[in-house]
Length: 424
RNA sequence: GGAGAGGUGGGUGAGUGGCUGAAACCAGUUCCCUGCUAAGGAACCAUACGCAUUGCGCGUAUCGAGGGUUCGAAUCCCUCCCUCUCCGCCA
Picture 1: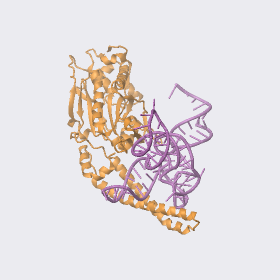
Picture 2: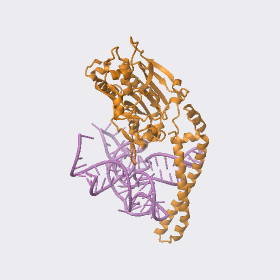
Picture 3: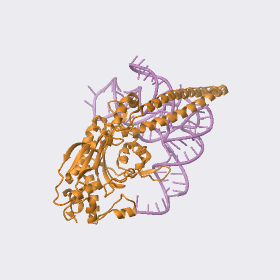
Picture 4: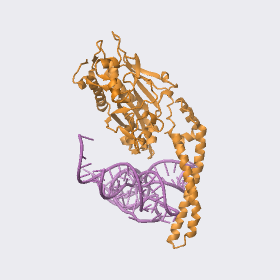
């Protein structure tokens, strides 16, 4: 949520900034709504005030033993006016609220302009794609050859876009998650958290998935429905919702390993082969809760933590700054980390690290007490994958493959694989 | 699943229809006194929103959530959510 006061005071600037994200801010609708809201609110509060004082007068008169009948009659009409004004105000505020809740976060001034993936700006590269003496296979061929990846069975059990992983590959998958968790906890100072995989609508509103992106989620039936988390960002960030943190408690660095569930509505036909894009995948998620002045630097650190995983796995990658049109709803600035996939001869997203500034904090009422003002103010929240486990496994398979279809185990994963050197 | 108890400000905890946005205590902040690994005294100390704005300010809402009764609700009624205790079941 953008600061409503700011939207009001700097409407032109807000509209211009949102345009960078390809969002058309309906200025005239907003201004009309806002003008009406102001009128009705003032009117309503006057009526409330009037009735409050009359009610107090009635109380006093009654205590003094006076006849209150005339006073009761005089307030009758006022009561109805007040109720009508309150109803009108409630409707207007709901409208205004949903208007504001539908506005994406402002992109930072440094966000590259552009509308699609090709407009993203490469920031740096690490490592060199290996030259293979043979035609490198993709993870599907490799996995099926090793009898470790099975998409047909998964489709029989569930649906398309699911996978069954078996044997040493399943262990590799687990090893990757464990390795990432250990790295972030032991070397990067994160607090590990185990969190619910089902969350309510409030939590999803807080991080920005609702109300606009419900079709991307799996919802459980019920009067107060729960949703499967699309990312641990949702429960992990909401750990501080409706909370006022002391300055000394910040920064918080949280790491969660969870499955993630996405309906992938609207991505029919994209990445249908293999386990690049699944309805269910595991991810190790990094979340920072920081003081506002620290968030810019925190994004660099968080991104570095995710990169460290790839460096230790010796997987070539590049970091890109997302252009306005490619950025998410809640983000003010996003780095994507793309790992090299020999099977596709392309860099593919394996992590997305965003600074949402106070956008999520405002929605979820996550605040800290600023010692300088003594007042509760929104914290800044950041999140990033560190990393997507399924895609990391794909990257290991494809980059560590050998001519015979076997896969070498990366050095850092050997302890997690019981010393296994090669998956064959 | 069955039975019961309860949800009030950072914490403990009063408050069953009328200056109660809320006593008291603890924690916290500032000041005074005192001079010594301490104690005592005073003041301040919820959040959001609106209007006004040089400054002091004024108003509205909020006592788990939502409805209802009433001139007036933390207080009465209804629904829901959550927590705790006992029993059952269960990993």
